[in-house]
Structure formats: C-alpha cells, structure tokens
Amino acid sequence: MLAKRVIPCLDVHDRQVTRGRQFGRAEAGELRNVGDPVDLALRYNAQGADELVFFDITASAHGRATMVDVIQQVADQCFMPLTVGGGIRTIEDMRTMLNAGADKVSINSAALADPNLIRQGASKFGSQCIVVSIDAKRVGPDRWEVFSHGGRRPTGREALAWAREAVAAGAGEIVLNSIDADGTKAGYDVEITRRISESVGVPVVASGGAGTLEHMAEVLLRGRADAVLAASIFHFGDFTIEQVKEYLASKGIPVRLLGIDIKTLEA
Image 1 (tube, rainbow, N blue to C red):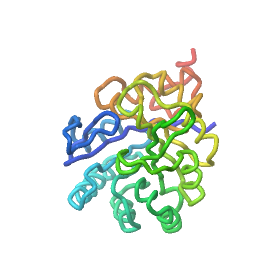
Image 2 (cartoon, one colour):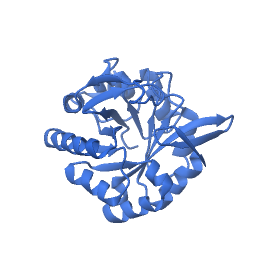
Image 3 (cartoon, rainbow, N blue to C red):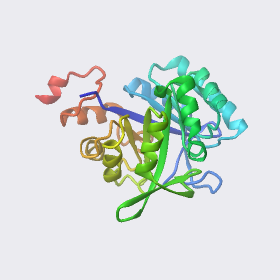
C-alpha cells in the first residue's frame, strides 16, 4: 500500500495566512490571521509534511504577484512538493505558478466553467500537475452538490459525477472539500470521500473537518482517502505533523516517518 500523505493548507490573503469556518469570507471580516506563509511553510517542512497546499484567496492581479513571491521563497527553502490554487483560470496562470516553483496547480471554479481547461493543462504540463478541487455540500440524504466561487454559488452538479468527469478530462488528483465540515473540527465527510475514492482512479485528498487524530485515521481507512489535508489543527498548535504521523503509524496506516522507527511505535 502506498504511504498516506499528511498535507497542511495555507490560505493566503494580503501575504498573511488566514483561517475561517465553513468558507468564511475575507471581505466580511470572517477570517483570523494566523501568520507569515513562509515561516509556516518552513515549520511544516521541518515537521515532515508530505506536501504543502497554498490557496490564494485574494485571487487578484496584486494577489497573484504576492503568491508568486511567496512560492518562490518557499520553493527555494523547502523540499516538499507545493500545490497552488485560487484564481487560476488560464494555461498562463498555471505556467506562472509552476515556473515560480509549484509542483502542482489546483483549479476549481475555472474548471467548472470550462472543463476543457483540465484537458489543456494536462496536455501541456501532464496530469500529475493538475489538481481539481471540489467544494461539496450535502443537499439531501444521498446527494452532494458542487459549489463554485469559494463555496458560495451552487452549480447544480452532483459531486461524484463531477469528480468522474474531471478525472476523465485529465485531472491527476482530486481534493475534496466538505463545505459543511470546513473549520468545524467535527470530522471529515467520510461518506462522500469514500464514494469518490472508490469511483476514480486517481488520488483523493480529504479536506475539511479535521479536529482529532481519530478523524484523520477514519477518513483514510473508512473513507479510503489517499491523503488528509488540514489547516486549523496545525496552525493553532493542536497537533504537529509528527504527532499525526506517529498516530497513523500506530494504527497500521502507512506513512512516511521523519526520524521515527515504526517498529518502536508497534512495540
């Protein structure tokens, strides 16, 4: 079995990492400043994070220039793969971030508006570089709807169907964000994670709701996710990357350990 990944996420606004709840908006004052993105990236790199995701919630021309600078600084000092998302709408936007040092780009609303962007990106840079992020909300007993524009606009698309379409178009990875669970620390949406994980042939990253170590193990085991993404529990010091990996390893979940003897954990 491939090692499961533990991925911190940095939401960047005005060169500060912020954190909200259920897709809170910067313009409404619903976000809390957490710290400098480069400092946090260095911290997580030292802790042994498998990857790092940056999300540009400014997504403007000014924000794009800021993110390029941040990615360049982090890429120069860190050795983990970097994924960048937020406001990426064109092949040139992708090229800009990849040239700055990102390993992957994440697209969401732009892919929903034009799925051909997925095909073009995969053709130009390879599927391994193209991540499709899906913001899903439960709207019925057995239905999850995809929302665009930061979780604010319903699209009428069913989440599982859209995940399959995105992968067919060339997406090399899916990041599944639960709008209901985001920032609540009440646990991931295991059910929709499992359904998508079992239905697509690419890695699925579970996002939204991490509050305990048990939540992470559950979505990896029962939800069959390939990776867990979290923000609040890392930013506010609830857990370190090492603590998460030690716990997952103790449950028999394969992870890449940093200076830890897995036999000791199993003793």
